[in-house]
Image (cartoon, rainbow, N blue to C red; front, top):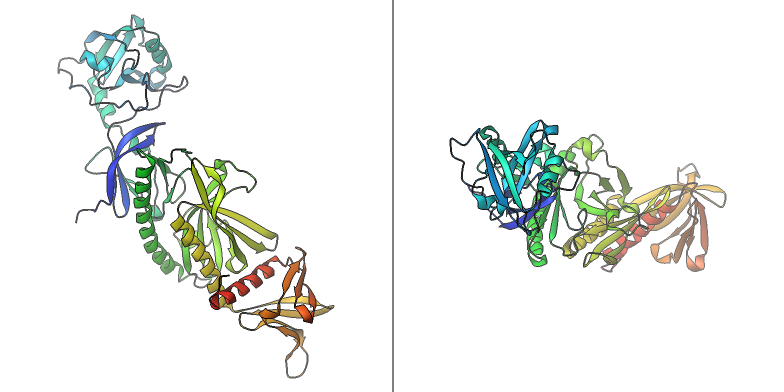
Length: 495
């Protein structure tokens, strides 16, 4: 059965430090890129070891190569005169040089430019001299300099080397894209087109303005699940970029649904008990809330489970990878404090962000995340709120040791029953705990803590109680708020 193309068209791919035209096609689980023409190794910058020169505009495109040279041309020296054009230069690219143990070789001839107009030069020609200056022992940089200073009339002494021509014709810049997908799946070279690459989309990170700032909002970034590889695609304008982005995003979202099911199947047999992943995906996290530069945003893979909020540097797939997050917070002790537009902007667009605060034994940790669309923002917001509410219903009751009026006690929070303070040990032969006080949630007027070990609960007319937890009270305070939010949500109100 033939693969279905969800969208196809002409884009530009950033490869070898330049934009190159590609034919792109989105399938159900991958994107296929086909180069219209091979880019040079690198543009001349004064330090590179190979490249092209005198391309006056970025939109200059390399045309088809000249006809194959005559069969008897190989090995014969020729002198070809070129008339350099002010706008476009010679119209060739070179490779090789003494440092590469190769002669200076023509690797590309650009259509309609000076070299092409002679009809006498070919890919695979070795340049022996320029206007009489010997290049047989020249380095690549020496050759570049000689060609640049040659003037408007340039005599090239060349000799065709047939044995090197296949090397130039077969080299594909797409082969330099290293891409590892989930479970080690790799980007594949197309079997039917040598200059094509098929890139799997499952668990990829799709974004804009993360690693390549783009004020015109034309560039789409695609990052591999292992976080080690990236491709950048440029569209003709912002509208078309939005269409491509939505097509890719829809494909990746559909694949992630299947991945979520597979991951839960894998994790259901963990030795530490069943873990259920309820939502997962890539986000951009602000590395420093004080820093405002675009580079402060870093990719992070986040998962919401039935009990925790997990952070990874890559998309985990195996049990071992899932068991080793770089950071985790209890979902019960995590609160959504912001969801919406942020004043800071990248390019011409406002940022869509949400922020979290988590109570930990070290205090409060804050996280600011960026998403790519209103739909993503809504999805993550709902997943977080529902995740907290579901965790409350799963646990329902929490108990911790406290000191109250110099007595060792236990404070219990119950989803339905509210606050109960009991003795730390049974107080009679019936093995019953003595209840010092009990209040429903409706009685609570306010709560406060010192960020160290003390917690105050104010029950209005019944007075305020000071509790010493002997540890940072922030986790308990955040869990208390989660219980209250879940109860409010159950009543059909907005928490």
